[in-house]
Length: 207
Image (cartoon, rainbow, N blue to C red; front, side, top):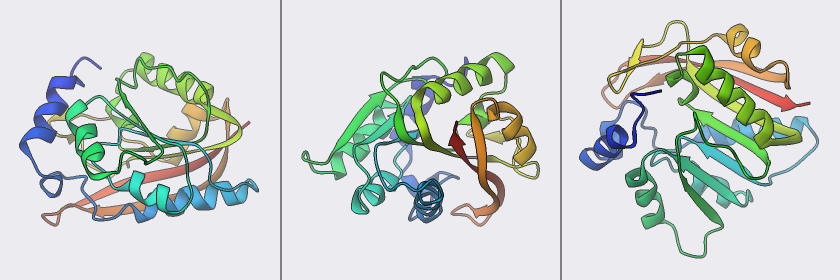
């Protein structure tokens, strides 16, 4: 993932307000719902969670509000995480990790792993395999993984970078050695300027 550099994303988050990015959403309602539904299907409740590629999303705020903790926010951009840190209190049960998910390894597993629009930046099989191995190591047995990528009808690039688009079958092909299917859905995300982007979402259960 040579293009997915800290400098590239620091430039994006330093030069734009959140609503000027294509992936912006006022609230992370779908992600909160999918995480809540996934843990309910496994007979569990909120616990520890990591948001991979957190950017400046309000997902962390919304997860804390409904009982998830601790919440780890990971992004390759320190500038993005600085914006999250600035709006949350120092007492918030949040851990900040500046790292490239293609090479990062979690020190301990989480109850839940969330990724909205990071996995699709991994276009090489070796990168994808490293991510899958990290997710398998990073989710507790019985935990959940909720992941959303551009779907087959989605854009071929994001923020000037190429992406690998996925349907449900292709996502399962990557993760089914370590995860079982819980649910899936297709989202039509509308950018702040009205463009439609197709997303594929899957919720998976760690074996």
